[in-house]
Image (tube, rainbow over all chains, first blue to last red; front, side, top):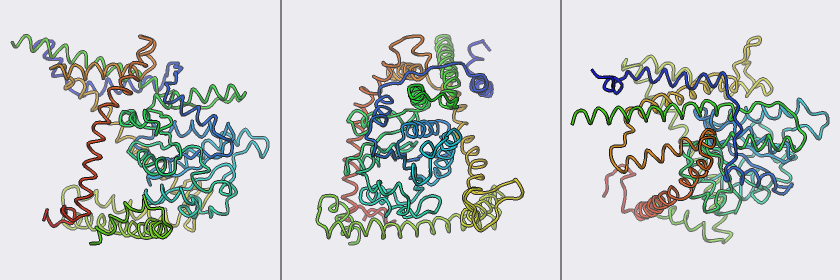
Length: 293
Length: 215
């Protein structure tokens, strides 16, 4: 058997081993990358950065643990951005499997801020600076009900507190008090936000999507129904970079892990490896085909 | 008749701002829909228990895994209902032995998240193998697809900008213009199809969803 024939019939386990190494090595020894934000990410960042102070950022944690590595950094970056800017935050999830991820994200970021806080004003307090409404169902009840009265949709928060007793809810009654809803999802849930919350109540919607589903959302981005979008690990890394620049601007010199940016080394290496696979596979295919003719 | 009335009312409530219509719509959405959804949970849990009990009783293929499913279902339900979320929000059931905690959040972060992430991570291996074996420039369409994939893959990583400065912008243009044009066409088709199917269901022309065939 000729070299190219052997290459075409290579045991797939070799390919698996190569891709494993290509992903693992840059994860352990990442190379330095400074992401440059593309327009959809910049638009989302700028909107949140400049929205009126009395408006709340709502993050809909609509992703599940399987796609967590790609989307969780977006949630963390959004929370850091909001709290650094002294914006109030409301969290919810329309995916029951996202409940624990929302809890993990808010716990991590509040610990980051509270461990460095010196005054009550610097601290991030549950019920005052943020509220985690948790999950309820069905989706249409939530999306339309939040336009009327949020406390009717979520009578208790994730921790079992009555929402109408929380100080933050005094100024957060419905979509009129929300600056933007950012739905982070690997499914079509952001489109439901557009259909029911944006179209009916006019609340701006942002989106965080997996790279593979981002292409589906460009029509909504072009029409302005999405204010901005973070697409995949790259989008997360770009938003992290914008937040890091904002921290510098605010004089915040904290060394915080940026998992989206860290994982870009692996993603870069994996993309290059797959491109090389495609090139080699095509060369082998055409050489063997010509020989057979 | 139920589908006809509720289907027309559900659509009409979006465009009729009368307080009586809004009130009924609110009750339907906030109360009736939630009650129906709660029943679907009972149905779902009942179905999964019944399915796995039958597998265990018949010793069907891979029946020991049914025990794993049933035990995990019961254990997570008990811990979720009575065990509290995490050590900061304890429930009535003690969910730690010394320093070892098995609260819902602990189980979720240490069992569910790694399991689900591992399953999804396998995709990278299959994608790499498929790209090597099947992604061929056999004809013009396949070649165009291959070129677009190359530009998008390279544009999605910082190396793309280092090699060819305008590459990420070009990748963004592909997504914003040709991709959007194609997607919009597909979306219009899906939208019109959904309206037609919904009307057929509401008017009783299409009854397949009831399990009774097309008539």
